[in-house]
Image 1: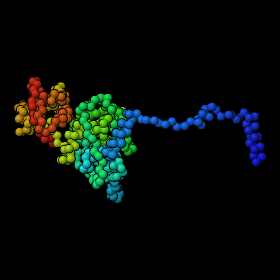
Image 2: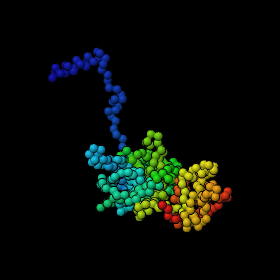
Image 3: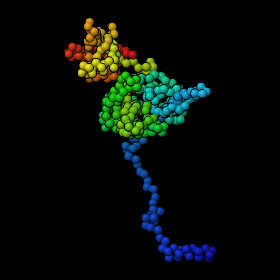
Image 4: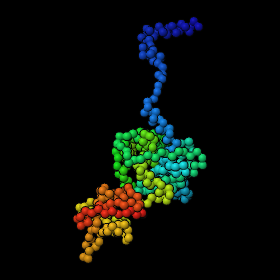
Length: 367
């Protein structure tokens, strides 16, 4: 015991002589005394966001897809992971809404609920023109609640929005932002039309968020997160969502009929031919190439393109607007008509022989 104490005393004296020993600093003594400060009450805005997430989380699903690959040598077919995405519960009968591009080309899709249950999904219907698909799962018990439905026609730039999805496979992730802009347009999945009225948001949307819900501050569905603008492929603060007003028009048809029937005029148009004609003539609009006999367009007296006796092409009517909204391409014409339903009467503005006319036409079911 004396030997040990003597050794410690000698070591201390040595440190003092060498100048290597230092008394504990004031900061070190204070740090030893620090204790955790109680958090206190969360802010009203924080509590509202937490409640929104907890209320909606169970209605959002995780979608994983697999593809089939054939071995070159053995000819055996294997299922391999293909990708992941998001979706949400539409109704109590097991319908799930997502983006078409989330499941397109996949051999199988599996839907995982927030409680960990997995279900093999069946494709009910899809609309490439809107990048919307409806799946169905056989939920035997305790079906998750559907996402409450809101509206998108009355959205305002600057209002808060919330996105829930599975970016990069990180399940049930919440991001927040605002409505950055409205009425944006992007090319549709079918390559023939454009999706109109898209909502632009700065809420972080990344690969895997596609198909998930975009919500307003009341937790109501206002859109389906569908695309991002990013040079790097990750979120750059510019995301787009298909508006819920479009979803409400398309999804019920997909559930009932398995496809979406677009309203039409009963005319024939072609993007390539129209682009060449309008460029050559220096005009903007859509030339009518043919009119179906007995169609509303024929009844309204729409005049198609025709050949003169000398072989010259004589331009017919040029559609320049639908219900007062300008049309500059076939894709834009289809998108304008898609704002209406079969049976609606729509005023079509056209040029005929240099004169502007407004013709009412009743829309019929298209292809």
